[in-house]
View: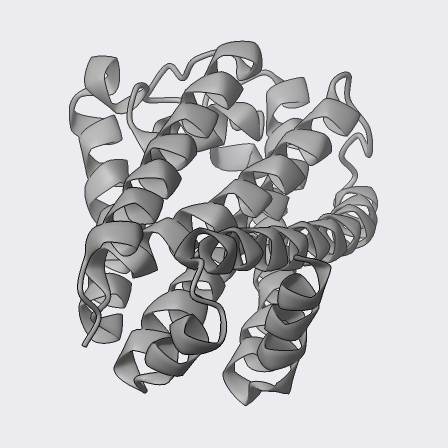
Length: 245
């Protein structure tokens, strides 16, 4: 099993697309943190502590990159038909899926940790330059939740890639749903949006929203984990039974 995970990590590291996505993640988080600082004076009656926490919670914006990493690492094998050789070399398909989950979980954790560190450094500097408080209660928990959410999206990407298999379709579905549709539903139907995957992940990352009430982190975390687990179990079951030729 260790060799399979190691092989997956080597394969991922050798991909230029993976390297680009991993590099863009912390940069994107820093840009979001900068935007959060710039908008601090325009956020109505939101307490200043919540606004400061939101700046650091931008570390969770790396989620889209780990989601794509998981999808490309799985659906990409179906696109290039390398999955056939993978299963011929390792007939136990469950071990292959588990190796992918472990590898992209590790990759997601690494990307999440680096993104969190970049967000802390940039966020603290920008808050200081803007004359805002640099720290607020709960910031360490926000950063931990952001890293866990980013890691979970990497696992979710593996599940979606194995379920949909078509790389283009999987990427399109993931981007449309997790970047737009889920967020729109959270805005239009806050009572529903808080229970959806994106709402649960934002709650885990400690995001505060003016127009929508999210679950507390202790509830959002298990809910998001349940979504990830459901996708992973469904993908594993279907991969074990479905013809791949």
